[in-house]
Length: 297
Image (cartoon, rainbow, N blue to C red):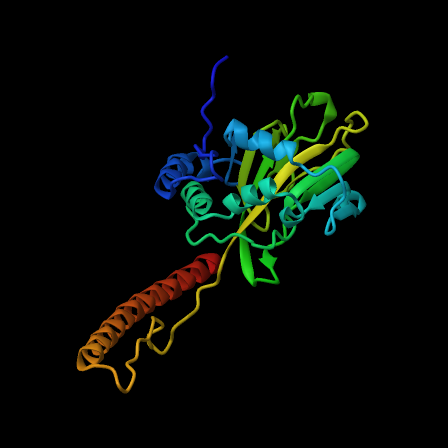
């Protein structure tokens, strides 16, 4: 039997570990394909996780109801769908989701998407483990853009499927529609260890809107992960926002001299960043003016 090397070579012997540099390199190699995909930036990756890891997650997928489960019966907005938070699961699942929120995962995704400063959601709002039963569906939609609790902008969705021996007759394909909602551009079967990554934009329309026709007891399972960026915090005053070191009254002259050196370095860094910020702000104003003139013409 041939061995298929996973896209993410995660070490699973003692927790889940992946070198950040290696993760970023793998992501960078996929960037072009991701950026130019239609109908919006996305990528479908098979054999995404190591076999031991994905098999373990499936084996530990909770069959019984958990304390914070959400069950959706909203018609086109989601039917026969269960969402389970990782924190309600056993140690294996919790460790797996800790990896999904790790620096290595973020480096991989920043490489793929070319979006800097990605952040995970420690609360897994709307995410975690998803399970949809026979007759269930999720209408075509564009996801919420702002995490109100964390005040972060949602940028990237990651879906990892956990469905072995999935038959085409069951339905449940993820549909990616164009921005005008005129055509289903891509249909993705939710097969085992397949990962779908895509930008979370105001018009990245997707879903599986036809009722599942699975046998009784067979459900459509997936991992849902969402990643965010923060809003830039302007520094109009030019004051330093770096660590401020101070000496105690009775400290030695050497300590006080070290503190003065650190203060000068802090001030120098602040001036450099402020100049860069001013330049960026000026360029943004020019681009905004250009867009207004272009649209007017």
